[in-house]
Image 1 (tube, rainbow, N blue to C red):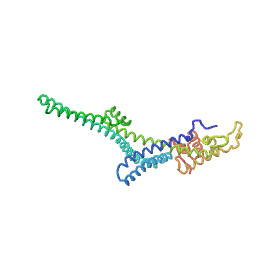
Image 2: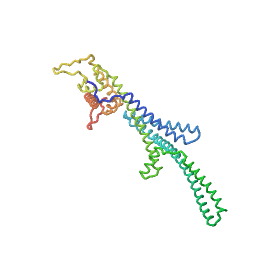
Image 3: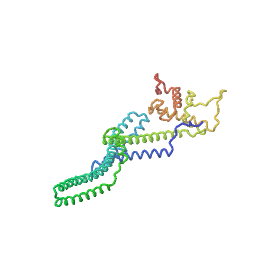
Image 4: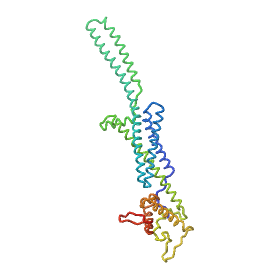
Length: 354
């Protein structure tokens, strides 16, 4: 009898490599954005090193606290989980604030570059407008000289001045048109589109996008840290189960062994009998391998429950040994038969052995 086709198995090397790559990239991005803010707090090099170290420590400490929260929660250590979660929450607030400041600083740099380019164009436009206004005044003065029949005395000077103004205007227009085109980046285009669709200002839309990106980055990294932590726990218990007898001669997985715990009150792993009442002999060369593995599992369960290292709950036993529900049911039936565990009226179990 082989393992169930849908039974969970450890992730492949490729899946783990992808998970580690995403985790490392997201943590690195979070550190970089925090550094953008913390390094801008002071221009002194020593202070930059100090604040930069704080940013790195906060980021790495935050994700380790989240990993530790997963470890303690898996062991049902509620108080320890709350402590780890508190540390993570404090560090996450600092980290998200740093990421928001870093992303905002980066977008401000892009916005300033666009603003500088626009201001240079506006400067040329103002100079051209001033020269055109002067040209219009000269044209009006020239017309006045014509009306006063003083063409010889004033008109020639005004016409010469107008030709110079026109040349200056043409030169400024050429310089303005030769300015490099400052294209709008994708992020600025997104922010501008959001501002128009939501009917708000550009700065409000930018702040919303920055906060969203910072939170998304933090949640993305936390998800992959949790995924890797859970995978490491599963691999440990999977390896532990295989070491207890997962490679028996008949190829059965050790997880199937607890199903035979309830077959007999005094000998939960007694051999099965045929219809004539005779004990049926096993056909392989190692008939004792699986009962021994199951017995070792039962002894571990009893040891943990007896020493209060594991709550007397089916869910706790299933999570600790990565067992299926029917296997845990068999273990608890055997424990109740032995008188080690009793079931209360609310269907909860209680350890009663002295």
